[in-house]
Image 1 (cartoon, helix red, strand yellow):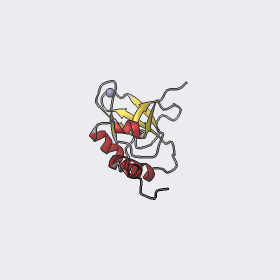
Image 2 (cartoon, rainbow, N blue to C red):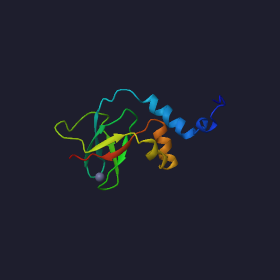
Image 3 (tube, protein in one colour):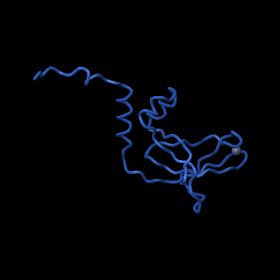
Image 4 (spheres, helix red, strand yellow):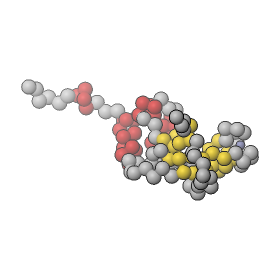
Length: 119
Ligand SMILES: [Zn+2]
C-alpha cells in the first residue's frame, strides 16, 4: 500500500474554502427572527423571517414600485401575520453561480431573500 499523498484529494478550491469558513462562522443556532420592510413611496410592507444566521440589509427593493424599503430593525410591526419572504444562505452550488458582488455579500455572512411557499 502506497503512503504517497493523494494530490488529487488535496487540490484546493480557494472559493470553496472561503465559503466553508463563512458557513462555519455563521453556524450558530437560528433564532428565526422576523423583520418588516416598508416602502418609502407606496408604503407596501413585506414581512421576512431569518431562515439562517447571518447578515441582512437595511434596505431592499420594493417589488411593486422599485423604490427602497426600510428595515424595521427586527421590530415585528406585523405580529399577527406570517412572513412571506425568508432570508437564507445559498448552498455552495447556488453560491457558485452568483455574480461576483453577490458572492462577496454571501462571503461576508450576507443572506439572500426568497419567497416562502406555504403548502
Ligand atoms: Zn413601493
